[in-house]
Length: 136
Ligand code: HEC
Image (cartoon, rainbow, N blue to C red; front, side):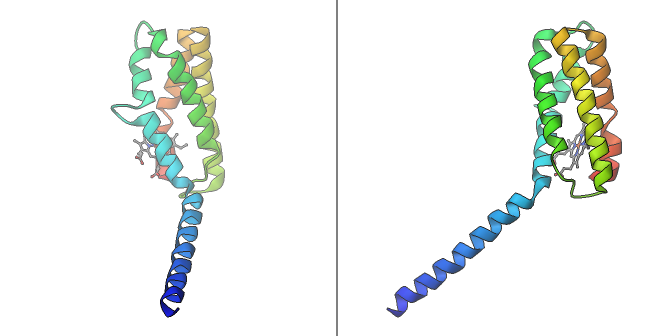
């Protein structure tokens, strides 16, 4: 009987720990941000560097349209995250700007309008430093 009781207590303790851990994981919006950054900006596999190549010179539209849409989706997702560092107002402002540029890029991609797509991409290209300085 004593042994069963001990197991029950132990089970309860483990249960409490795992509930607390998953609650903490749900709080951690920051991991989402790193994840989005990886998908977009990983040097080898990221959407952003690949788009940079496809948009250079004569645009390779076959490699622009789908990634540009994905870019916009990820930018919109970034807007819903909470920054772990830096002021909230700044995060709201910078992620909105980021999404606005991603929209220009996506619109250019849909219309196959090179000037528009490149304009959006140039805006995204300039966004990194200010945001990293404040929020990373
Ligand atoms: C709106 C804010 C914002 C913009 C714009 C932004 N970043 Fe980030 N970036 C972050 C934050 C915050 C982190 C830290 C995430 C973390 O540590 O979880 C980060 C992390 C990263 C990382 C590391 C990812 C990892 O594994 O944790 C890379 C690479 C990166 N950014 C590249 C870029 C590049 C390149 C640009 C511009 C073309 C850019 N970022 C634009 C906010 C931004």
